[in-house]
Image 1 (cartoon, rainbow, N blue to C red):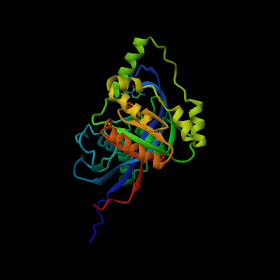
Image 2: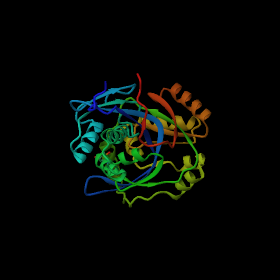
Image 3: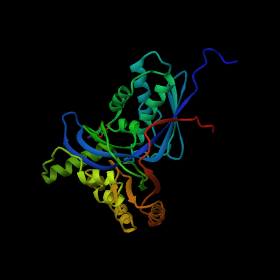
Image 4: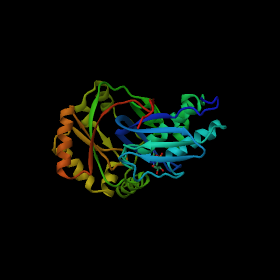
Length: 312
Ligand code: C5P
């Protein structure tokens, strides 16, 4: 017989990875962040985060990329659950299970994605009644790109990346991602960007979205979009990890329409015209030996959303 006080059933949320179609980095702000103008796109590589009522807070990480994810209180998904708990009060602790597919420290928002999923999952499990815009505000406290992982699709980010406006995008784009074995530290890549700019004596303007990129998105034109992919952190990521320059060159040689380092790297994202071109590029990149692993994915896709519980 089921008790009247039985715990609610676990909730599983699926959350995508992201790629930055452009990442325009402005001046360093007084709070240690840089002002950004970026266009995010959610891509169909997913982590699943399950939350279940437990006696104590905890996290288990499973899946092909579980290694390297912290399982103590520094885990961003645990911090997200605890932040929401503190906000609403009087809820029971949860145990989180993260099935990890998104590269760790890869510039695809792997940690931020899990934090977004944990917020959405705990909100449903505890039935908090928190308004969506308040949830997105909590997301911004956890990291600059966490709000986007709740929203999904294609969106413009400003401020330090956390202020969202949706961007019109037509159709589906086909991506090939070249992964690296070792992650890059986001603060280290921003610091390298500052160092290179200071050395060049560059004057850094406030960043703006690029009109040509916005119209390529509106037209669903992969070739035009490929010509406008850009990332102000790319030079810094290559400076710290010169092999990324070879990966970029290999992808372009092998027929990609365009390529760019994703976020703070080290993942390199290539845009191709068709799914078949994606398979060909993935095979060629794998054979070239430049990338540790290669993944294909389409974008845009949905942000963090509840799915039926896994049965395995
Ligand atoms: O917001 P998030 O915690 O993901 O940022 C990680 C680090 O990346 C920050 O501590 C900062 O060093 C750098 N960063 C930045 N400017 C941004 C976003 C991130 O300098 N707009």
